[in-house]
Amino acid sequence: QVILVQSGAEVKKPGASVKVSCQASGYPFTTYYIHWVRQAPGQGLEWMGVLYTDGGSVKYADNFEGRVTMTRDTSTSTAYMELRNLRSEDTAMYYCGREFHADYWFGPWGQGTLVSVSS
Amino acid sequence: QSALTQPPSASGSLGQSVTISCTGTSSDVGNYNYVSWYRQHPGKAPKVIIYEVNKRPSGVADRFSGSKSGNTASLTVSALQAEDEADYYCCSYASGNVYVFGTGTKVTVL
Image (tube, rainbow over all chains, first blue to last red; front, side, top):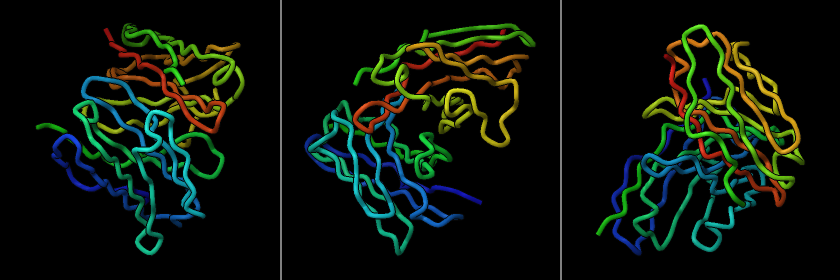
């Protein structure tokens, strides 16, 4: 069974950083890319970027360039998303989702990680 | 990259059909046949129901169908069931090797 399990909820202060993990199981980790998508409360989905798990390269959305870093640990089949200099507008549910090479769609997704930013 | 435009809401009666539009530009929807659709129930992660404009993943009912014309993609849900009441999002691959989601549509089953 293919599943992505994300780390637990986080509460951070403005200016801090958060690192969310996404551990994959049920398939060879490096055969699928990992995308990160966030959803602010009551809002829509926003694509943040993609981690190419085979080589470790990344592509970030312009809105997050310079503030986000996506990495992976192939020994534990885990992808990470770190967001720095947090502000209240970063309060959201963060999801990881996998994409088979050049399939251009995401699934399945992790269960989501709620990141709350408040002073 | 601006979000794709979807109507905020749509509704249909049980057993009827509803169609949701997703309007982009020539840099995304209009230039690539890589439009996917996701259904999201409250408090749950999204789930893909259509990919590459009109293909259904294994296990997705044939009540779901997709199409595209120019810069606008569409999702039709036929034979509406209570479980179809959810939020629906389109997503397109776009120039620059990025992805853009739609604004989302809340579907109500009457």
